[in-house]
Image (cartoon, rainbow, N blue to C red):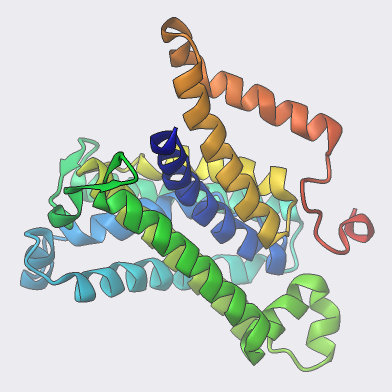
Length: 301
């Protein structure tokens, strides 16, 4: 039972981080950024970049973790900010449907750029190999990476909560998410807030890629697609625009996936995702506004 709990927390951590990255952008711009999954893949493929010796050192696993982790996070944050400046800034006054289509197109551009450089074949990587060692906690054996994933996710959530509640920039982001037009009238600088939201979202995407790449030992240009789908579902279940709801729904989805993998008969485990999506439909039927509806949702609708 304890092993199931750790597995659920580990998978739920990935979904929660993904949902949080999507909810940050939606809260400020009302944009569902479907390019988020491709940012996950790009952040890890940056370690395979063949152009410089520094990248070869990273790929060979010789770069210490305290330089490797910030490098990957900076790649994700930088790419997201670049996407905002080059693409999304031009669509700020467009309809949400137009921005969503633009995010789809941007995701395909990033994906086919990676395809052009690295082909579609998965690549093996040795990323933080020391974290694969098993540890025992109260009789349950789990990889050290799984424990670090859970603790790192909790630390990120606590740090982001303090940032949003205790800093001026965080207060501006919350005000923009509540009422962007009013926040601008009160002196909040739109460009700074939006770029900050994209940078945080990109860094969270890079953290997911780092964890996922370390767990699987492979990278694939499609690696962010499935995570993006589950993260988007968690965002909807939690309540669009609600950061707390996105995190809660992410952990609940992870728990549901792991529990069904254990509880379902062997022949039915291949259809686990179908059961998870059926549970999602039931939740939305009885609570269409999400588990924790964001303030102002009724007014926006």
